[in-house]
Image 1 (cartoon, protein in one colour):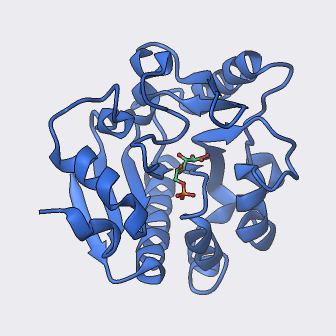
Image 2 (cartoon, helix red, strand yellow; image 1 turned 45 degrees about the horizontal axis):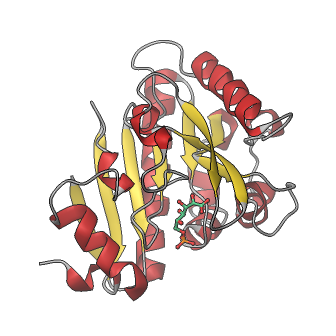
Length: 240
Ligand code: 6PG
């Protein structure tokens, strides 16, 4: 586990963009292509915007890069809550990435069917060893959730499936998410965490005893890969 603290969201986002570029170049060199899963929420927006600008716009091998999502809300693709919409507007519409290499998560004809269909796509893309993506970006919720892996949800214990459909009663939203088992197959997993509101959750997830049903982000521990925590000073405010 590598924890890197940055003065602010801007410097954190530049570091995240550099990690994306580095992983993409490395994967393309070794495997001829790269698979990255984007996270949702608001924190990664600036990272995506920076990736769409020089130098990263020219540096990243977009023509060999495939974009996935670690989770999605079951809303229309043009809904402001859509993780796909966030990435499309901040990044994907601005870079020369073939549209056939953008793989949005769908909840149709149902969240469960959408999850199964996405798993089939992932298994086809990841066929070969090791069966994981090259980079998975994640966020951290104030309740310790990550992706759409929420406290005490059955998806936390899923060991075989790579995706799961979840219902979030507090939001009245169905979602589809990667499972911890699949996230942990990745070569690199990077949490992006910013703001004082996340300081308590970050301390609990990193420094408190393991209690992964209450703190799902504690389930993220890549089997063969690297785990990065890219955090700003405010989010790190309660770390010893
Ligand atoms: C989602 C995300 C979720 C997010 C965290 C942090 O779809 O909501 O995948 O896990 O990363 O809730 O969200 P913020 O970056 O908006 O704080």
